[in-house]
Amino acid sequence: MSLYFSEEHSAETVNARMGADVDPRLKTVMAALVRHLHAFVKEVHLTQAEWEVAIDFLTKTGQICSGERQEYILLSDTLGVSMLVDAINHRRPPGATENTVFGPFHVAGAPERAMGDCISLDGKGERCLFEGRVIDLHGEPIQGARIDVWSDNSEGFYDVQQPGVQPKWNNRGIFTTGADGGYRFIGIKPVSYPIPDDGPVGQMLGHLGRHPFRPAHMHFLVTAPGFQKLVTHTFVGDDKYIGSDTVFGVKQTLVAPFEHVRDGDIVWRSPFDFVLTPAAA
Ligand code: BEZ
Ligand code: FE
Image (tube, rainbow, N blue to C red; front, side):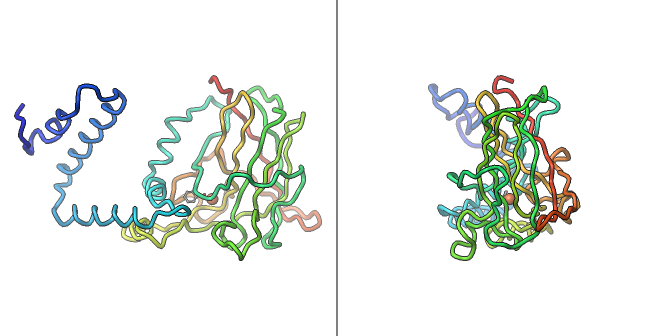
């Protein structure tokens, strides 16, 4: 093969430049990336103008990133890449609770709360009792599981999106299971909301005729010694966006019941058990 670049052997020429001592995994990943990228450019016959649009898009995507804003993750999420990486890395046995996207709104160090506590601090929204058990694949309760929960408020914003407007730690908390594996807390029935769409990713969605909404969901991060970390949500099944989540996070098994109840100021009850997978599985 010639040392010089040609359309026909473009990817091979680039990959042949790699040194002899390159880390084997890096070599595999980069060679495949170059092969697929070149095949893509050839398949669509990318024009010079389109190449410039792509460079401009990626530049703007980087420029809008900050400590609080990660536009590349939004790009990965909206192209289904985040869910694909999650899927191939978290294949679980039948019966185990499935993972879904982590999202950008988790904050480490939320207050530890007692079972039954209310996490909604702004007094808005319809109160909902979330309860269930953390169990293993045999249905045995898991003691000492930490359940870190977070959701938007009734106006569709996380507390971190509205500092000074919402109370700090609004709709967040950490609960630790006892011997029965049970958990129980009061939050609100979450509502659907748009992902941040005032940047390049929002523009891309607009050009593609896509909306930026996520169906209503409650986030759960469940950890217990000896078990795989579970990053998941429960979804409100009758949400308008349940079939068109802009980040593809919905899985059938994660659609939870939201039962209408009347118990003081509690209007909804959402029962859901989390089934953890052993670390070794
Ligand atoms: C979220 O559910 O918080 C989320 C996930 C992905 C992108 C934006 C938000
Ligand atoms: Fe969310």
